Length: 452
Image (cartoon, rainbow, N blue to C red; front, side, top):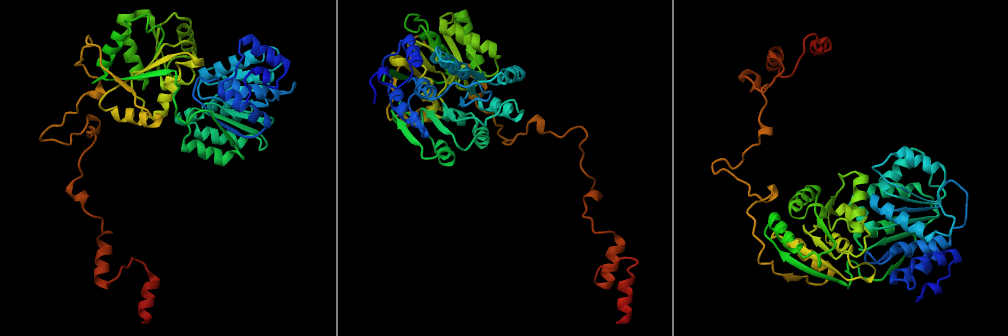
């Protein structure tokens, strides 16, 4: 494998762009993927997040992409989140500084008509989220007939977010003759199924075992009884501004994100910000930019946002909630320790979350070092609704909710209406007399009996 970008067989404009970025030595995934992608074979790349995967697949793709004025795109890059679309487009534009390549990002949460107009002007590379891409194809604003290379980045995250259906539909719309390139930090059975169904003779390039964390990330765990004690622990730790100078905090859902952000507002005010899927696109982009630039020291976010964040020099990633899926932990902590920088990860877990913590340790093959809570951390008595014990009345173990109570128009049937319908008195009497059912006016039946 090449030890320097000077050893790569690339054009002078691409080499100049890499020099401008200050890159001299390729990362392991960049060195391993270059020749495979350049050969035109289908490829599956396994590497930890933060190891330069974008340049790993884009450098050989750009080397093989000739100049063209055609309208329809020739390269399609699929990513799971809007933020990741913006990030990948920005990276590609850096690599193509001296190359005439048109790159366009399309994603949900924004006006589709604006994106349709941009597509009508033509694009060589389209970077998209699966949902918005599928909508644009169905509306005939985007045609995929010219696609020669398909790149799926963070594919395990896409499947976690429920994009399997859209991915399958997109595969059916693409030309049969194309090169498939897939990158992931973890390998799951679902990913393996996609490879078997849609890839042809795929070559796997792995620079780390699936689920292996970066060696330059120190990991620690704190056993904490409940949500608000976690808040108290967080407030105590964050007082050290010099040590915790850029902190990314992950929670499990939007409700917890808003609760935690509210709790941090009093001690830290404008030092903190929050992003999740209910926030507008402009708000999310602004929050990420302010955090990246150091305006905000603390950023609270959910797993949905974890994949779209490529931020420099994050000192700590704090897992406020222990993720249910162990792979998500790998993605979370991969936000720190990027580009060979040192990073630290903290995991807060309750008794209920201990099983999830053990699953994470089993995936990584290591034990996370357990730390004691600072003495000044107060054990909170306040509980969030999910933590409160369910009250069951002793003499009424099955208590119905108010929603299950009968409405004002509900009434029991009268006794006479509860009886079984036996077909009317005439039918019952005839049946008893002739031993078989007989209806009034059955002339054929009467004639038949007379002949006998």
